[in-house]
View 1 (cartoon, rainbow, N blue to C red):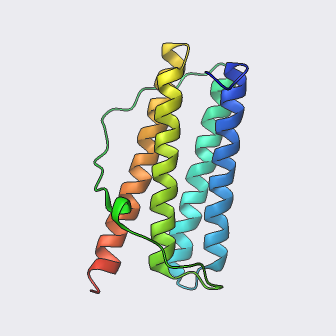
View 2: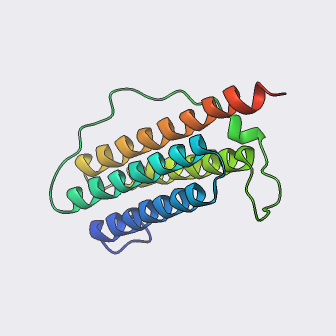
Length: 151
């Protein structure tokens, strides 16, 4: 844990990132014009709050079960660029931003797992990495179904 003073410091950092992610999706839900888009982003805001709660539980001594399997990565976000931000975020841009954000979260948890001092903490971070990968995959599938189908 090179730049963190303690395991609690790492967990606090991850908890803050989850709160930021929840706020990000809540903001997108408020800005969304389409009802299905509002619902999708509200759902993700709730899931990020769930991640935060899991991390807070780990900080209090609870353990997370390891992820059952790895999640498929369609790698769509590797090849997509969101248009410059406008006052009204398009559905396409919102999905691209969400994919990229989930990819960064996956990398964060993977990196934290590699530096974790205990197996329990490593498994916690790997489990959260897989949950972030599931989120990214859901956005990729939505992008494929809604945006790519239109083109």
